[in-house]
Length: 281
Image (cartoon, rainbow, N blue to C red):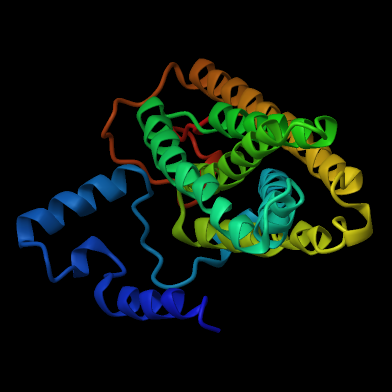
């Protein structure tokens, strides 16, 4: 209850002070609000439907890519579930006391915070998501491999926890941004993000059962299962990247190139299948 209090208080503050749209912001003047809405509309369609666009919801639910990327997110949540539930236990198995195990679990999260914000910013500038998703899962995989294969070296195993935490948490903003970038409709985007956060939690349940105490400190089952799903995530991320790039090239050839940057678009009839729309790979 105490651990959840900061999140609860922050949620209340966000609800009060964060506007739903830049146009409703009390902290911007008219010129700034217009500029922010213009920037927002460059990544979205000029929607005329007020409220829920049920065709956009249908497009999200019937799009195989939405289900595939939800599986990708679920692979990430297995790592997060394992880390949040068992990181102090894993660190304690390296020979530290209970108090020291709690203390030594802090640095991996601190480094992960810096890495997560940095890689997300670089991904934004490069306008690329999938390769960075594959990269962070590869880093996490290195950690699971070390935990699985190196038993006697405490420093190597502690370094492995950094890799696992870094890879798991850095994937969160990358995957969520990837979904948002490739859904031009607000209703389609909201539905896809809802799928991401519901289906994506399924493997979190598995994390509670793959680290039984009698199997410590090796936990071959827990480390091996996490490694397997991390490798699956890399395959999914690279496959989606290849598909998006191939589809973008196909549309360039069919439409004679891409529309000039900043050209107003309306994708409301076919959403991400509309002429002029290009995926973020």
